[in-house]
Length: 249
Image (cartoon, rainbow, N blue to C red; front, top):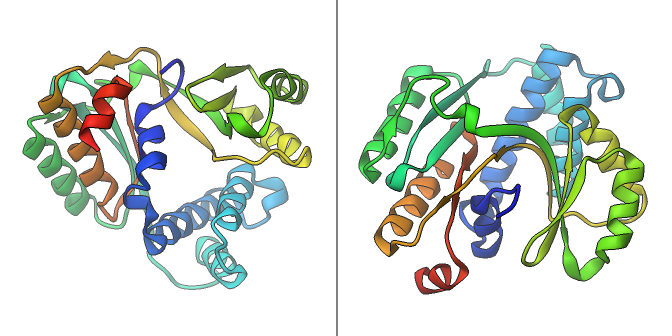
């Protein structure tokens, strides 16, 4: 998977844990709240908030929910105070795993994350142990059936993207994090529909997983982490061949 996260693709194909609408809304509300707390409630001057609101609208979140989350972030309404924290570790087969969380109770969250790593045969590590294996990039994923590579490349580069990567069924537009919002808005203005658009941690290199048992353990670890209420995003640097993935389904 050149420049992309295999886990992200697998989640879309399986309609994994995030198919639960309530969980999607919970994560988006946390992101909106934290973005508003850190950068203010005016989305025009707060790119992170603008991106979070765009993601919420994509999921058809009601306007009232969005406005309440912003007001909680700015202090106009009472609400939990969430703290951002990232955990790092190794899963089965030496796969590097990053877990981005938002929590109001760090002790609870680290206990849950450590439990899932241990249960899968992995290990929760020290801060910095695997983050160097990833780059933070803007990632905009487009279905290959909706646009030609040349057309998407022209629009993306004109908007300021770094590259367009062709994958099995998708194109991935890669951007610098600072340029992500401008590129996303420019492509949306061209009526290009996204499968996914976010600032993500993209692995520099991947571990090829060909053992069925290890593959199942990795997928179970990532699914368990995704199902944790305090977890916002999970990234891992692995690739499972398509033929093996089909046998795991």
